[in-house]
Length: 283
Image 1: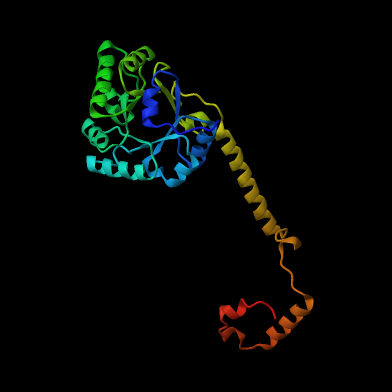
Image 2: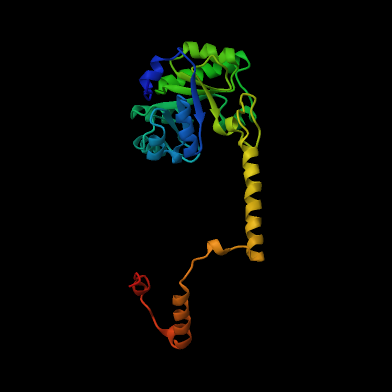
């Protein structure tokens, strides 16, 4: 049975029925892999969104993340939102203020907001740390969700919130809640491709899970690349490259005629020969 790309209406109608899968990708190869693996959603940087992405992932719901701090005004967010929409994005992620979210939603863009711990606002949390561990801070996350609903967002990433808190909010909110380290009580699970594939050379968060170790493979390939280059250098220096099989041949009689003409052509260096004449096929 062939798969059909879900719409926003489909995602909202299916809230609470099953756990969806979402992944953050950084290359067209990862886009293709997510599509072939049958993931429900993927998120990518706004500047990466293109027709090539849409063609590579025809049945995956694509969210273009509008870069916080790059787009400074609501008009800039809206302009980029419309750009990625024209390139085929199904929704936009926006961590900007509620006025901006409301403006994007008013123009018909499907907006994914962000609640709980928001990395771009980490200074207010005292760095990278979980939130909603007290009744007061958990209530604050709930109010964030309500504010996003009122602004017109249809979904929100909920990050680093204890599972029971996230589940309680999800049960009471119309938002499609996408869990980033907030447990299985939400509507979707969200991980970064770099964590899944093991290409992250920095800190792995507690909620991440490494399924492969691509970094070790990259290091192995790098060592092989250096070895190949070193062998090539040694072959050139030792005369092993180019060998006979790498060289073009010329008929011995033609070579002799050329050498004879070369030795007798004293003015050849000054003569301008059109490239079209050089490129003519032999008669």
